[in-house]
Image 1 (cartoon, rainbow, N blue to C red):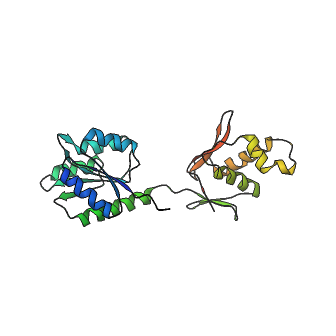
Image 2: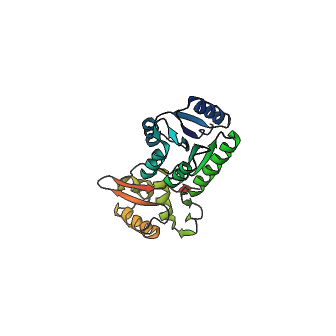
Image 3: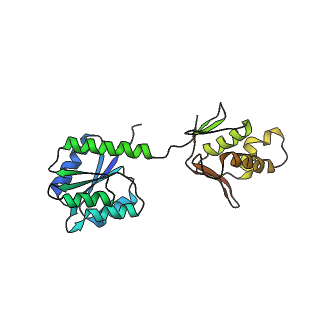
Length: 229
């Protein structure tokens, strides 16, 4: 199974530029998509899984700078490179102030554009939160410098929730998986050990997640699911 190529949005009203960029990005292993209108680009930015965007300063009569400012106001953090003409120094400055990560001047070297794009991708990747690591053998949960030691039963409980990430497990399901064969008589033991785990996880999502109670349904990992090793 191959990795999905990064999807890059190109926003420019010049079909020659969008076509040339799309062809070049495909040769470098990207999955380019193009838009020539701000409204269509905004919709794609809001709904598509994009790795980065390349946006011209002017898109017809509309402003690429306003588009960038809007996507930042919406909380989108993907890398954005802006294209600008050599004489548009003020526009480039305003683009960076609006939230663009970098710009490149037209006419440009395609190799330089790809190099700048990769720099921003690496930067974005370095800033992306990493999940905690649950080591089932050592019974430790680690997130950067933070680490907590778990008991055998706490580790088994957390591992069960991790293995069923996205699914809400009822108290009965957890009891059947971890305690029923031992002859334990009460499902209350689940609540006891969930309490132990929650105290070790702390109140501030130090490890990137919490164990959330879904009323009348059960319990689920909420946040970044730990990696189980």
